[in-house]
Image (tube, rainbow, N blue to C red):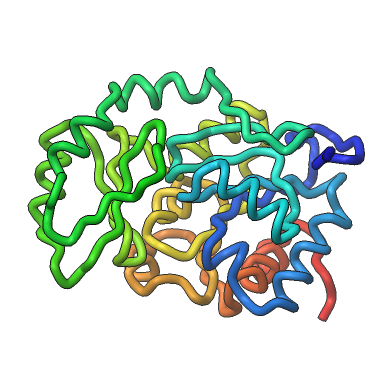
Amino acid sequence: MNVHATPRPAIADRRFTLATDLDGTFLGGTDAERDQLYRWIEENRDSVGLIFVTGRDPEFIMEMCRDRHLPWPEYVVGDVGTTIAEVTADGHVTPIPALEEDIADRWKDSGDVVRTTLDGHPGLTLQPTPFRYRVSYDLDPASFDDSAKHRVEEMGLDWLISDNKYFDVLPKGVSKGPSIRRLVEHLGIPEARVLCAGDTLNDLSMLVCGLPAVAVGNSEPDLVARLDGHDTYRAKAHGAAGILEAIAALDLHDTPKG
């Protein structure tokens, strides 16, 4: 399998690059709306770059591209910003060591300490996936005890609640926003040619990091409230259609008509 079957210009030389969250954003909207966005990307690969910026892990991303026939991204910011990687021609997500060194230094192999500290904490259920630089939990808002936040801060780490059902423990200062900026700078992509797209609170740092950004129409109300005062495009359309709406409104690239 060659996921980049045709030669393409370097991503920095393309007219536009989409840096998008998956759940609710790139995967949001109707079947027809997603199909329109995905076909448009594939038809314009010489001028459109694609980066997935997601809380999901690399294995999930590869499965989605293989099984659901999503357009393959060239790069991935995964694991809520703790993975920064290139997608190789054979469909593997390969971390970029130069960009992850600082993330690893900030994490300091804290996984075991985090799991021990939060073991049995009310409202948190440990997710079984063995992440490298984060620990993630499913959150039950009805029984969640807020003291988890303070316990994480005492460890010198950051916590993040998104969609009122996930609780992530992350290296200090690491999230989607700083990581996508780090990748864009590393690749030499002009900032004005990038659009960041998201829909939940774990996208907040990406949507306010200084790159052009859109909150799609189905965005989490808490995210929308936190965007007050920020120059973030608020799409009316949901998911994939909201992405195309923003690309057209911000004049970032020609888009499908109708």
